[in-house]
Length: 274
Ligand SMILES: O=C(O)CCC(=O)C(=O)O
Image (cartoon, rainbow, N blue to C red; front, side, top):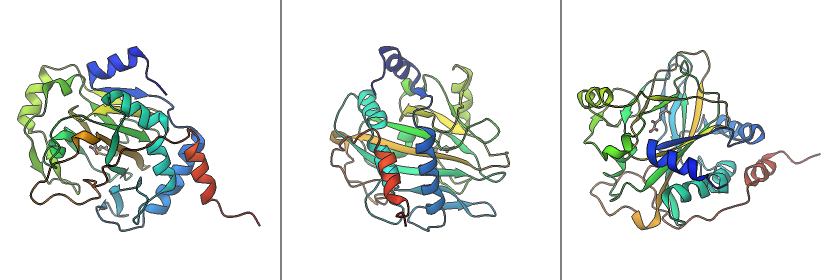
């Protein structure tokens, strides 16, 4: 898939671009089966919350090894629809994945993600330039009630803003200071709720300020995140680097696969016919 000139202009201006129906219902069904299989696994990085112990985040679905490796997620991370779109947004054909995750925002109990920029954390991983982008794929319909993402249009143009470590939820992260956020939001266009049917995606720049609310609905909200970096921008050494599940050491350029690779990977998971 190639973005149109209007779409690339919108990504450059707003710092994000919504891509409705990027993933088909058949693919979503396969990916959802995979999430169901992975939820009980206690893998490095899995952070749980709520009375059912649902993963607020679980990592590394795209990898070929490890407890959470998933053929369909690996395939999706390399399909032209996603990888070539990331290449186009980053203006570079040599990309690797910094990390992937699925955020299960549990019904009633799934908690807020405070306003943050992903590069707030990724710079501390040793990544020198904000030349990174994330593709989020909805595995459920996303609504304001179930805690959809919100994007602050144009906020990537402000560059990286100094962050504070927020440990108010199960997933601790570098968040934007509340006073800074109040000041900036008063000068900014209103946040955009990223709503859509399962299979809708959004691609967003690593400095775009984003957040999401508590899930007040009676159903979980599942979203998958694929974070891409350019190979030339791989992290430099830092003291106490974060683990591989969140700061990948696999810096080899990724190759594109056929666009039906998720369906093919799903076929191999089906029990053999009698
Ligand atoms: O899944 C969500 O609601 C927000 C996740 C997020 O902002 C992130 O992982 O950076």
